[in-house]
Length: 318
Image 1 (spheres, rainbow, N blue to C red):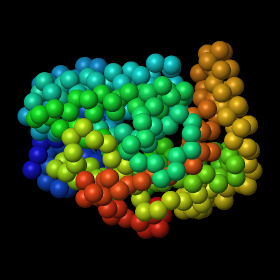
Image 2: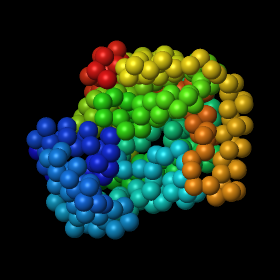
Image 3: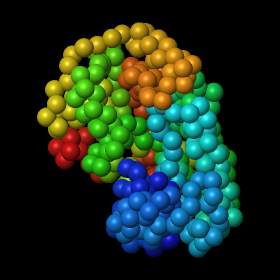
């Protein structure tokens, strides 16, 4: 059994991972930035450590064999430097701290967004280059962070990147709540009628991959972690909405219009320093309108990963 330090344990992925790690018999310490997070972490059965991505020190993760880095700025909108500070600087700090503390394994929760600069992806595998110059800040900074993790691989310090796509399942604090909120406010709208094809990642499958990556996988490598098969964006989101008794409208706009609206709204919101989030961002328009189907063979071969829950089973359990 291992002593593992987890970042982002008060969030969707980090919380599910911490719970599973403890269930598997590991000792889990978790970054906490507030009394509220302390309580959430204790409820998981983990030990809260009061620090953040700026102040963490080697003593905070003393005697931890592994670090699981789930924390990231994943919001669609925020201050211009928010993505860079959290995703790039924060990851660099965690790597430096893990090395200084003598940890031997660093598992980073990445994303398929790290290879996205607005293109369609069809059966893409891990040979597709990272996109550190992507026009979308989230994509660019996650690519830059992943490169730091891959480059940090060395003798005695193994680094693994797991790349989920469209994380969903029980405990989701972002995706399904956003669908519910938009539908409830009468603001839901498809892009290109929701025809974009996508891979997905149920939280149980991602957690399974995290457990595997404690001992499996090649250092300095990234792995797509996916559900079975692919699905149209409309079919997936409609099925998720139905689990909440929601029927989404058929209203749709073309991708070219959504892209333009997203860019324009971002410029207006930045220019006027508006505190609210724009109704549509360029990144959201891209995610909803581009095909993103991925190839998970590398994870199957090198991590011995296979999904532990099917998409149909996951939807039945929402």
